[in-house]
Image 1 (cartoon, helix red, strand yellow):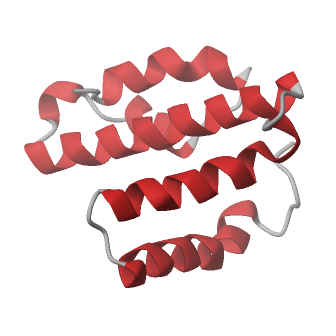
Image 2 (cartoon, rainbow, N blue to C red):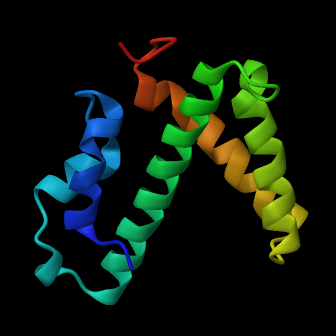
Image 3 (spheres, rainbow, N blue to C red):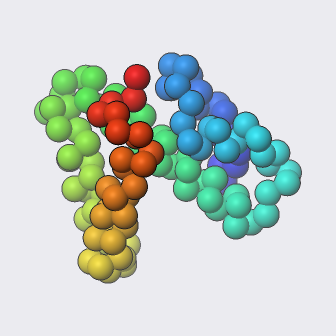
Length: 112
């Protein structure tokens, strides 16, 4: 299982940018986490790793590179469906993430 200290190992992948997961990891000792917190950090790590891989696809200009994010998001949705999530759960999660984007991005189109 990935815990807070393992998230710090991803720092080179962001070339100096600190992700949300990393900012939580910096202030939390893995030994102080309960099982629920460990699961949350696991989810942060999975999301962070997926984002890094999507960026890598985009940078390779491969067949999926032109729309790497769209390709992965569509495939991710089908994987959620295959894992037993309902259409409503998937839709609510995607729409909730989209609704929170402007707050997180503070109105910027792209992270600098």
